[in-house]
Structures are given as C-alpha cells and as structure tokens.
Image (cartoon, rainbow, N blue to C red; front, side, top):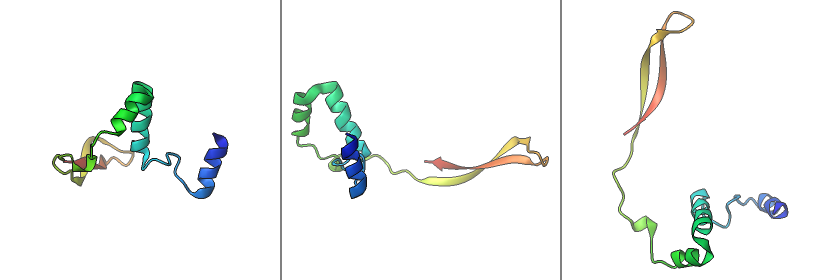
Length: 86
C-alpha cells in the first residue's frame, strides 16, 4: 500500500484515484463495506446518472456582520463576520 501511495504522489495523483473525487471514493467504500462485492457490482450497473437527477433550489452565501452584547478588551462591543447560506 505504501509503495502505491508513493507512486501516486510521484505521479501527482489524488489519494482517492482512480475515483473522480473523494465523494465517489466514500460511496465506493460504503458500498463495499455495507453491501459486499456482488451487490456493489449490481449497483454500479444501474442506469443512474446523478447529474440528471432533479436539483433543489440553489444556495447563495451572504457575508453578515454579527454584533454581540459583550465588550472586548478595548471596551468595544464584539462583532464577527460570518457566512449566511440561504
């Protein structure tokens, strides 16, 4: 395993290669762990195209400054910039 990981690093491959991304790797790992090889093979043969499934509403992110009710070391009201996903 360590030799293969060294090879991946030398070739610039991601650790989850040959999978597309870490999410695909996680799915494959879960399938094999929970369903076994035969059921995993059956799942992979299903004509599912995830990119064609219906999508929910899009998300947007807004930066918001939240003002607290405590004072900092300079006796000013504390505040924090946060991301609000809606």
